[in-house]
Length: 520
Ligand code: FAD
Ligand code: DLZ
Ligand code: SF4
Image (tube, rainbow, N blue to C red; front, side, top):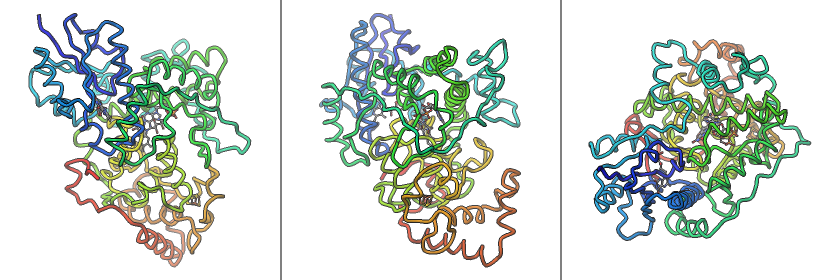
C-alpha cells in the first residue's frame, strides 16, 4: 500500500480538507514551520505568531483525532527551513512514496510544487464556494464580466439569501442603504479578548527572536489561534456588530480601528472558519430577525461575492497578472509606510493601526493608504509587497487582485470599472480625521492645503490618455477642463512639490515586475 506524507500548509488549518479525507491509516501528516515562509516578505510579527500558534494548536487537534502527526518546529536542528525541501526530507525519513498537499494559495508555491515532479500530488482546496475550474467556466467567452454578475449567479447556485428563486428582500444589492459616514454618537462593540496560552507565549518569544526586526508590534496581539476562539469571534460579530455592518461599512474613525467590521478574514483565510458557516450564520441572523437585510446582504456579498471573485481572477490571470502595470507607476513605497511618521492624519492613523494590530479595515486599505499610493504613482510591486507583509489576513490570492487590480488600477480595469482615486473631500465625508489634521481639507493649494486634493488632480491630469475614454470619468475631466489655466497650473505645481518633498524607496524599472517582489 502507498504511504503518503500529507503536508498541511499554515493557511490550511481545517479538518474538512479533502487531502485529510484521503489519508489512509498509515499516512503521516506534516506541518512545517520554516524560515523561508516567514521572511519572503517581512511579515508583520503578529501574522507570524498567528500562523505558527494556529499550526501548533491544529497539530494537537489532529493528534487527538488519531492522525500520526510530524511537526517541524522552526528551531529544530535538521529543519531545512523551506516548505518543499522540509516535506521531502520528512517523506524520505518516514519512507513515504507520495507527498499530498492541498492547492496552495500563492502561485510561487504552486509553480515550485508542479516543477517537483510526480512524487507530489495536488488536492483541490474545497474550502471555497467556487472551484478554480468552475470560475474559469463562468468567465469563458464573456466579454463583460463584473463581480455583481458573478455574485448573483453564486446566490442562485448556493441558495444563500434566496426565497422562491428570488433575492431575499426583493433586491440583489442593498448598497444604497449603506455607506453612511461616521456618526459622532456611535458606540462600537468591543471584540472578545482571547486568552494567550503557553503555545502562543512560546511562539511569541520565537517570533521576537527570529523576526523581531519586521515592521509591527506584538503587544496588542489578539487574534484567534484556535477554531474555538474563531467561533467566539464569529458569535460576537453576528450578535454585536452585524446589524450595523452595512450602514457603516465605508466609515472611517480616527480612534476606532474595527467599527462594525468582523475581523474574520484571517480566521477564514487560514482555515479556522469556513466561509460557508460564516455566511450561513449571517443568513440565520436575518431569518431570525436579529439583523436587517441590508447588513446581511452587504456582508454575504463580501464573502460569497468579492472573496470568491478575486480568487477566481487571481488563478485565471497568474502569473501574468503580477506583471501588470498599465499606469506605468514606478515609484518605490513612501518611506513612512514603514514608520507611520507623517503628518497626513488619515494616513498616519491607518499606518499606526496597521503597525499595532496587523489589520486595517477595507476603506482604510482602499481609500487611505491605497489611494495615497495610487495618487503618488507607487509601483504595483512595491505596494503589493507591503500589503502582503503587513496584514494578518494577507495571502497573495486575495491580496494581489485587491491591491494591483482594485486599488492601483494596474490591470487597466479588469477588476474594477474605474480607479478608486479620491480627493480629501471623500475622506472628510467618511471620517473624523480631518479635524485632527494639520492640513486644511477645504484648500487645494497653499501651505495648509490637504495634499490629497492637488494629488488627485495631478493623477487625473497625468493619466488623461488612459482614463478619459472611461464614461464614468467624463464628468470629472469636464470639471478639470473647465478650470482656469492658471489654477490648473498652480494645482499641478502644488502636487509636484509635495511629491518632491517625500522620500520614496528606490524606484522600480519595467523589468522589476517580472520577478515579483523585492526584498527589503
Ligand atoms: P469585513 O469588513 O468584516 O468583511 C467581511 C469579510 O468579507 C472579510 O473577512 C473578507 O473575508 C471578505 N472581504 C471583504 N472585502 C473583500 C475583498 N475586497 N476581497 C476579498 N474578500 C473580502 N482581504 C484579505 O482577506 N486578505 C488580504 O490580503 C487583503 N488585502 C487587501 C488589500 C487591499 C489594498 C484592499 C483594498 C483590500 C484587501 N482585502 C484583503 C480585503 C478587505 O480589506 C479585508 O478582507 C478586510 O478588511 C478584512 O477585515 P474584516 O474581516 O473585518 O472584514
Ligand atoms: C505565512 C506563513 C508563515 C509566516 N509561516 C509559515 C510556516 O512556517 N509554515 C507554513 O506551512 N506556512 C506558513 N505560512 C503560510 C504560507 O506562507 C502559505 O501557506 C503560502 O503562502 C500559501 O498561501
Ligand atoms: Fe487626510 Fe487631508 Fe483630511 Fe488631513 S486634511 S486627514 S491629509 S484628508
